[in-house]
Image (cartoon, rainbow, N blue to C red; front, side):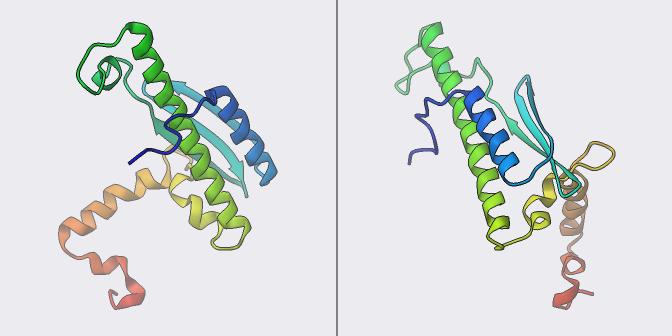
Length: 155
C-alpha cells in the first residue's frame, strides 16, 4: 500500500506557506512553526484557543534511508534524498489533517473544540492530550472504565 504523498516534490517551505494560508482562510489569528531534532511543530490561535501539532521527524541515519529495499548501501546523497522525501511527506500529511479538520468544522460536521481538543495548549505548555492520557490509562488499568461514560450507565 502506498503512503500519502510519498512521492511529493513539494518543499517543506511551500507546505508551511500553504498551512499558513489555509489557517488564515479559516480565520486563525497567529501562526508559527519550527523544528528541532526529530520533531517539527506548528502552533496557531483560533477562537481564543492555542493549538499545537507536533510531528515526529525521521532519524537521518535510519537504515531505511541508508539502505535500498534489497539491503544495498545507498550513497550519502541518495540517503539524504530519501530522508528529505520522508520529511516532505510528513509535512504534507500534516497539511491534510489540518485541512480536513478545518473543513469539517466549516461544514458543521463537528465543532472546532471537538476537532482540535487534544491539541489545545494549556497554560503549562502541555496539550490537553498530554494531561488526559495518563489519567485515562489509569482509569482503564483500574478496570473501572465506567466512570468515563456517565451518560451510558457509568455514574
